[in-house]
Amino acid sequence: MANEGIEIESGLVRLCIEVASENGESVDKWRRQRRTLERMPSHLAEALFHRLLRRRLLYPSLLEVFQHCIEDIDLKGEHLVDAEWMAYLGAFRHLRSLNIADCRAINSSALWAITGMTSLKEIDLSRCIRVTDAGIVHLLSIPNLEKLCVSETGLTADGITRISALKNLSMLDLGGLPVTDLALSSLQVLTKLAYLDLWGSKISNKGISVLEMFPKLSFLNLAWTNVTKLPNIPSLRCLNMSNCTIHSIFEVGNSEVKVPLLRKLLLTGATLVDVDEAFSHIETNYLSFLDLSQSLLDKFQFLAGMGSLEHLELSFSRMGDDSIELVAHVGANLRYLNLSNTRISSAGVEILAGHVPNLESLSLSQTAIDDVALSYISMMPSLKVINLSNTNIKGFNYSTSTELDRVPSLIALQNLKHLARLNLEDTQLKDASLYPLSTFQELNHLALKSDFLSDISLHNLSSIPKLNFLGIRGAVLTNAGLDSFRPSKMLETLDLRECWLLTQDAITSFQENYPQIELVHELAKAPSWDQSTYDRSTTSQGNAKTLQLRQKGKTLLTQHRFQKERFIDERLKYSREELLELQFSLLSCIPLEGSGVMLPKMLLK
Image (cartoon, rainbow, N blue to C red; front, side):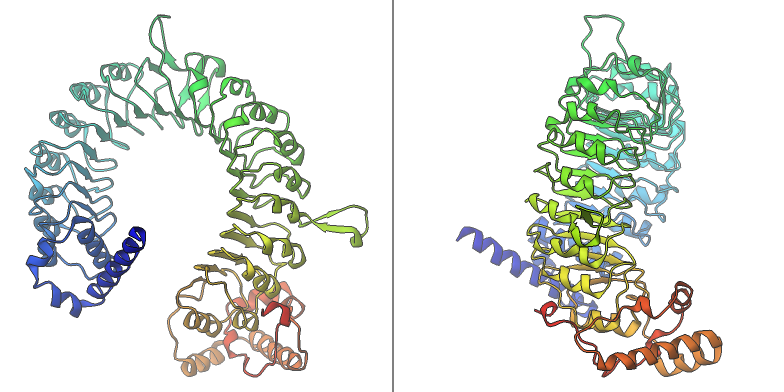
């Protein structure tokens, strides 16, 4: 009963917020009830605040009605936020967190409004390019500030040095700023720092030694810097040295010195001069997260001691069938494995099978695997997410050389009882190969992209009970097929991009019939044209070949009026060149009313 009460309450709250943010008139009615808002719980006030923001009903003078009840404000990317907004926000007595990242109108003088706010503990100014050293001066009067993000702003090394006055900082993001060795040295007084982001800075190997003075530092980002080796930082748990040239990750001169117990290591695009030396001072058996994507490594023997790995990112690396056994050797605890754009084939997947019992996410996109790999993937019982896009999967296995002895290869995936997301885009699947998917009880996200698919697949897949995202991009879908499509109750998003034969009228009709479903298509957000005017202008400007193709479509649709219980295979009508021509023509000129095109009864159930 308690849970039921909570659900009812949340439903009523959502309804109240919906009514309160319906339009400008409704806002004017309740904004006069300032006392009521002052007593509103913080989480409800914040929900109303952000609903108004999304609907563009929030303006500076309206902010004052929230000044006593809101603690966290996220205005990231709101280009209208400027000094006037900041003037009102400065009066928020209980404001704890303020995110104005990517607010390009914010400048240094606008920060004057939040001077001395004792409640403020977190502020994000990332990519506010007009905030300079002068803006930092205003922040120095905020005594309790714990988290500060100023990446990609207009700060110089002098402004960075001033940050040393904020003694309570535990998180500092200086990414993309010209942090010099001298500026970093000035920050060593920030002994509470646990998170430090220095990507793209001017730090050198000499200057980085000051990091030994941060006793609580657990996160460090040095990506895109010239640092080639690190001093020993015993407290460090997460290190990012992506796109660096690395000689040694840690230098431990004394065997009695405590070695950092790294849990997370990101080396995307890094150049490891000597792999063995780079990992020699790391307790690899503690690593749970390793990112080696885009690396040029040929040897992966260092993986052998990483038995605690849960997340392994090897995309765009040189991993192949000859090295995959090293991954299988440490696969007992793996939950995420990305092998996309590697040299793996179905033979490599066979080696993995049976060695990754806890694997939940597997990506083999852009690899040479084919349908044979599916039977091995089915031996990974915990899989929830699979990406097989841009592979050689065709949808069938053949017991003999004849077409009659083919078996749908996707049947193998029926053994995966937890499978929730499946990506099969840019494969060679055809309608007949997709039938097994209709029995996948837990599947909620399915992405397909193929010009071999038609209306038949759209209707068959509607029977997947928990599907909330369905993508059938680049398919040969017709207006009649979309009009007769009956989506499941759970469907929230239908992605039909690059389905060229669908017209504006068909898209609009579907949106009107199923407003709860987000339809993604090139025409889905097109303006409402004056059809008669548009027809005349198109006729006068169109070339003879386009008009001929439209007439061709009319004739073929007329012929199909007498062909019941069939789908229209649009591929039989046009050549590829004609389809390209039709993509930019007004297909809505083709009358579909009374065409008599019907789907098989079995697909309408």
